[in-house]
Length: 213
Image 1: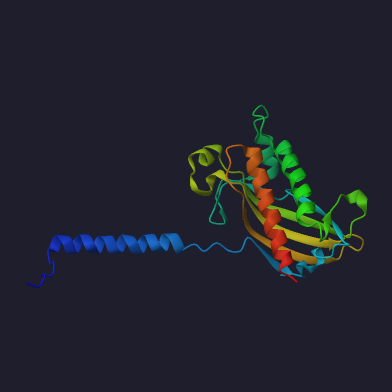
Image 2 (image 1 turned 90 degrees about the vertical axis):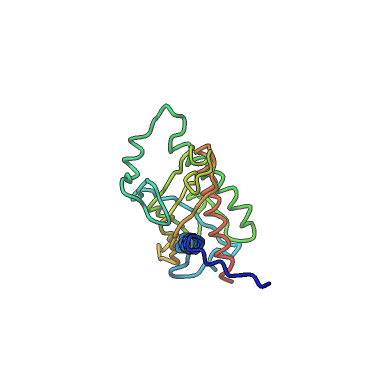
């Protein structure tokens, strides 16, 4: 005896609801396509592939806004970097200066390991060939609570902005990069969150330049 099609109105209603929910979930998941973390706007990353060249790398936070970033957009209520520094809890032990100093020191060391056969990172006093500046426009320092409970990207440091490369002697602009969104790995320790973001920046920047061959 052939099976009869289930035409129960209640079952049909439930099935329709399930289909609608699946479609909504699909668009929620795929509706936001993350852009490439870094893109070359002008010039070429080839300048960093010459092992005889050297560069400095400066993180410029002068015009940076600090707040919550969601899907590449800075939410309302962000503070200018200077305002954020002034509002820091100096007794917390996790203030900006030591966090950045620790992360930047690791950034330099890892740059010269990762790029030992390419342009090395040096200080101003070493008379470098290039000057590289990352103008950070937006920064989300993440949340310790979000990192602890694993709430999405909330426990990560996010950086956005623009990287410019200049000839050290002539100050001619050689290349410009758009930093769409650098997202470091989450960590309950703020200093390590910052370090993770700097390492993510270094890895993505190096890989992009290597593709410029």
